[in-house]
Amino acid sequence: MSGQMEVDKILGSLKEKREQVVNRINALQKDRRRKGGPISPDFAEQVVEVENDEVVDAIDDLERRELSQIDEAIARVNNGDYGICRNCGEQIPEKRLIALPTAFNCINCSN
Ligand SMILES: [Zn+2]
Image (cartoon, rainbow, N blue to C red; front, side, top):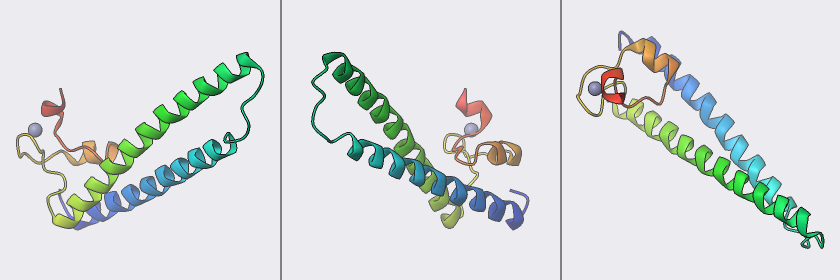
């Protein structure tokens, strides 16, 4: 990391990203509550509802995983070890961090 400016910028974008993910998780939960009504008598419709639930679960899972990655990245910024490859200990290039703020390893180690 060449300077505090970049870390601040990345921290800002991490926090922004975090807010978006939290909003999406909240929207998913609202969506799920809406479906808590009586089960549709139409079997075909029930199947669609179950499939939708599975999709919602899968998205929810992804969003939560992303949230924990963002939280971890923010924690690493606070600990001062942000931008250091977890695998080889090398500095992760700034370009990669800007493109992928939650990156925890360098390009070599991610392959
Ligand atoms: Zn590495």
